[in-house]
Length: 157
Image (cartoon, rainbow, N blue to C red):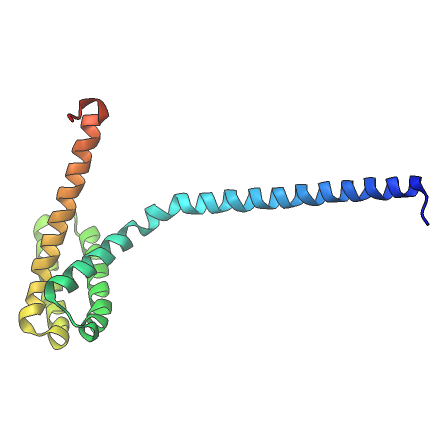
């Protein structure tokens, strides 16, 4: 049977070991939390365009009344169109007239790609619904900006 003194020493060593282990676990959690927080802080900036694109796709699919099979075929083509549209807009933003021409060419090319998937009428309607969605997003943005400028002190109940 171990002596009382040995038991106390073992308990002290075990207590120190537990404290050291707990400190290590605490530091690991703190490190993971910090890394995760930094990643989440950057996520909206990187993912903002994707969220809007996804909402636009849903909006257009709803407005065109696409079946599930049509939507599955339409979505990847529309995503490619959207990427090219953003690239074209960035590339020619300094020359408005050339930008309009390039966008028209892009829409004509993609209209031909949409036709076999959703038909001629709805392939033309894609761009009408795209413009309507963009207009709604702009109106929402302007409304939020106006509400921010007014501030809570100026709001009437």
